[in-house]
Picture 1 (cartoon, rainbow, N blue to C red):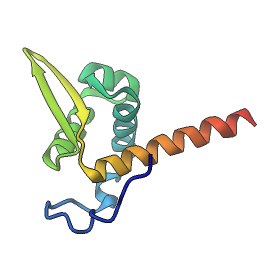
Picture 2: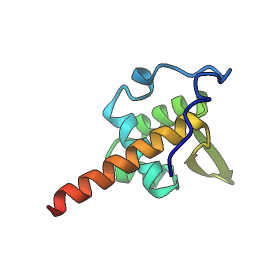
Picture 3: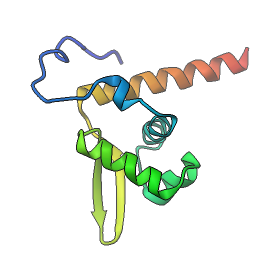
Length: 108
């Protein structure tokens, strides 16, 4: 699937620069994990990212504030997933492409 990127520049919603969104390995790890696993609770994200709980919480709060991540609460359990924003879909496609490229390179 190829995204139609023509309407990205015309969106009215504020979105921080990509340098800020992807400014740390921790943020990229979390985006990658949520791309690969769709939705997870914070404990699973912490375990898979091999980051501490406070760092993951901080990054998830940031992503929620800029509408990259959604949080669903089921009592005390919170589940996180990427939103369906066009820019998030582009990030998701980049990560999926990168992962496929790494997998195919490893097979050669």
